[in-house]
Image 1 (tube, one colour):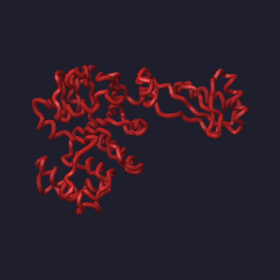
Image 2 (image 1 turned 90 degrees about the vertical axis):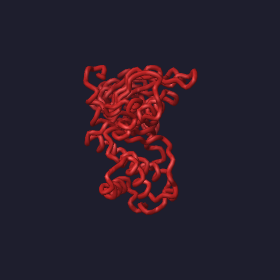
Image 3 (image 1 turned 60 degrees about the horizontal axis):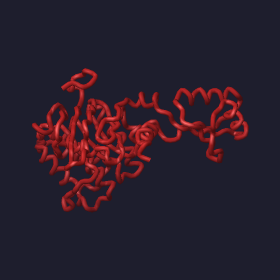
Image 4 (image 1 turned 90 degrees about the horizontal axis):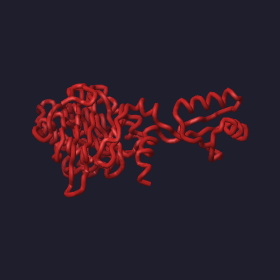
Length: 314
């Protein structure tokens, strides 16, 4: 199978082409096509009901598509589910745990399920517990963990067998701010080591910090695939500016035909513009003698694209 740009699927951990899936008469996927390259983090973004979780379940070999072509680590999840699972780590948005097992036993159980060599299991479990900061709970039962700690344990479970492809559905759910930063670093590290990481989340600002590229899905179809650099060039984002003299700032903006709003203590809000337009405006304000002390985007490029995609749903 080749991707749309002619590159062979061997360069991609995930390749999906024209996949359909219905639940009764309700279409969940209507010809979706995506790709996730090795060595990169790909964000899967779309509104509720767009088909993201259905797609991830198909990739995880837990749901059969009605039609279409799917490859995960080069294997077909329908024809060779065990081949896929041996190369794929799966972290769903909710999962069951064996509460009476200790944290160490829990990870050891999944190491056995993946038929890892017994001699390598202790060091691998210790490595992962250090990575997710749960070493002190190694011999505590799983039920004593908080929701966020269980979420980190789920990530370790998905990584136990060193998968080449990682599928994550809302991995930051329940995590505190520090754990979210650590998750970002872990995913970036896995991509740097050559893994293909596909992650779905509603926390768009964090996805923008993690991802190399984004796949937009809506109503079961692909609405676009972009690198984060392409999004930055295309997106139009609102900005906020603050100056030492608000009256001078207001006059300078008016003279440039900029319709500003919200002149309060946090600054003056500016209408959506591209990065180039924002840079030109800032240069003009400073060059015109306005003492600007803050100039920042409101939201993110990914949020702007998402809001534009879902505008008609209002």
